[in-house]
Amino acid sequence: MPGTALVSDAEIAERKATLLALGRRKHVLAQKRLQQDLGAPGRLGGFIHFVRYFWHILEPNTPLVEGMPFYAIIAHLEAVTRGEIRRLLINVSPGSAKSLLVNVFWPAWEWGPANMPWLRYVTFSYAAYLTERDNQRMLDIVKSPEYRELWGDRYKITRDQMTKPQNDAKGWKFSSSMKGVGTGERGHRILADDLHNVKEGESETIRTETVRWVREGMSNRLNDMEAGVIVMIQQRVHEEDASQAVLDAELGYVHLMIPMEFDPSRACETPVWVDPRTEDGELADPSRFPPNVITEIKRTLGPTAWASQYQQSPSPRGGAILKRDWWVPYELELGKPFRHKFEFILASLDPAFTAKQENDPSGFVVFGVFYEKGLPHAVMLQAWRKWLELHGKTMEQGAAETSAAFQRRTSGDWGLVEWVAHECKRLRVNKLIIEDKASGHSVAQEIYRLYGEETWGTQLYPVGNLDKRARAFAIQHLFADGRVLAPASPDGNLLVWRDWAEMAITECEKFRGLPGDEDNTVDAITQSLKFLRDNGLLIRQEEKALQDRAAAMHKGPRKALYEV
Image 1 (cartoon, helix red, strand yellow):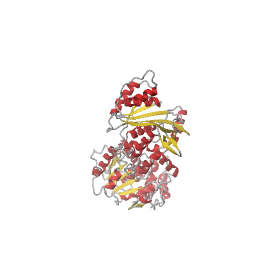
Image 2 (cartoon, rainbow, N blue to C red):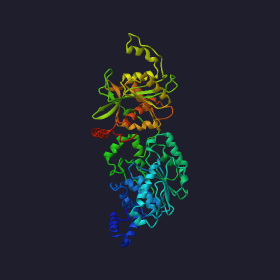
Image 3 (tube, rainbow, N blue to C red):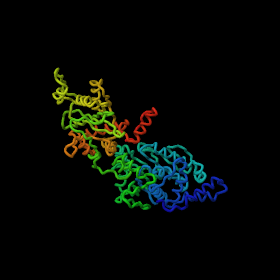
Image 4 (cartoon, rainbow, N blue to C red):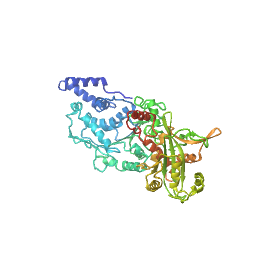
């Protein structure tokens, strides 16, 4: 819905061609008309023509694809320039050109066509390299011969640096990040672009730190609290993210919120724009995101990430992260072997060695990876949670005693190390991963000492800075995509989970990532699936095709296309 432009694109193209062909001096009138067209302050007037005019400088080989979110963002930024909006929150999907529009084209437009070169911008993101990247892109525009031809007499760049480009009208654009806010720099405009890293959105510690800064420190970066402008742009990552913080505080933000699929109950209307869609599920940007692409994105991300990042509607707290009906039954009669050959068998341990029931148990799972129709799947082969000491009693097997009889007689007195070693032997595990924490080191050392010559490898596996909840969300899409299975036995017309599988599935179903949750088996499961994903063992169809082509060319396997 581009609105009514002040001048046609064809007219602008004609004037541009005239200037390029005949030179500035002979066509001062044509130049002035072009300056007016690109700087006109009307809604969807000069700014959109400016973006079209200079797009080729940033993307010479990529055509500009416009859509409804593109027009809506431009309309709101022009309203900010006209002084009609001082606080603006933009929640739109990835791929909407939001960073280019807000952090690159708009400052260049305000400095030149809008004739406000004195403006000072302080820009923030979760990482400084993102704002530095956008500063360099803006410099590419304002230093271009076409830009200097039109507005070179208004200001000159005096400091050509990504961190803080400056002009001789005392304007500048400072690049910072959430960890670099102690600089003391203050400006006329604060541009907060993706303050949350999507990968860390479910990490309560990191998210809380970001939200606290938004509430307490962001506005302090304005020169003038009354006249200064704050523009926040991001995709939603959590129901308690920075966007929700400013909405809850009722700070007067104009909220531009565009879900990819239209939801009539959440139709957006602002002082300068109304969502024109009327049909439930109607796409916001079908030229850039057609239905087949939307289907693929949903399958890749999983329901929660899709709802947050593309629908701008994070799942409510308390909603199930790993739903029961996402587990795919692997039909297996009691006493029968698995039908598939396993390409890789992984054991995962979340250790907490203690025999006291009031303490946390150790969680242990084993997954086998098999291929069906060319795609890998992971089926759970075993799962348990046990309250165990590090070691149990040392017992000798009788001379005439079978291994099965010895196990039945002694297993009740085994410790954690003995149980893990037994399962790794029994299920022919290729790799054992143990969560890299204090208790994990003791278990790993004993496994190395006592079973170092066995056929499986043992590895301490770091969890990084993601908390339990974030780790569950990181592998959610594998469940939603039907790639995770568990054994179920026929019982009449029903399939019934094995007892140990029922325990693990129920724990997953109840898991919310809240204090008091039973989560040791969940932790072992999420650790397993993330390891398989990160190491290219549980990949998508197109990733498998890339891997096969790389192998044919004698190249190493590629990493997963979509990080988690």
